[in-house]
Image (cartoon, rainbow, N blue to C red; front, side, top):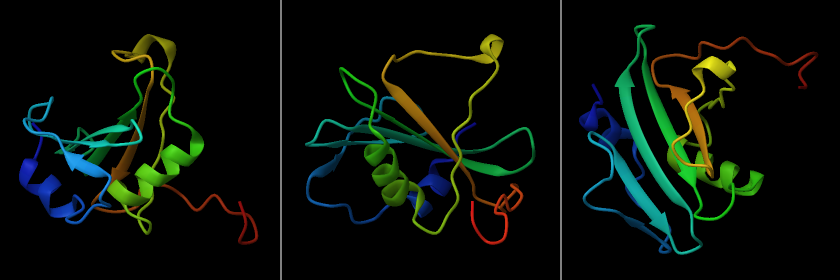
Length: 123
């Protein structure tokens, strides 16, 4: 089950003026925002099967995939500049696609479960 209280704790309290929260949110237990530049963001937070709380942020555009700059902008704004986020590429059998122009980020809210991939301090 999504944890709206947890999401409200970590969601940005102040957004740039070109963003607006969408009410009611199109997902149960989540929050959604729209930017005047065409980006749509939906976020949810929940305890996953690994026992950790994860933030899920999806971003989409109506007619094309978001660009890398969009992905970075949304990550910084909705996940945080100082929090790690990952993009997952599942096996074909587990892939779900309900919107052709949507990208997803996940961020563990409890700890950093990923190793340090840098070699000699650089990626």
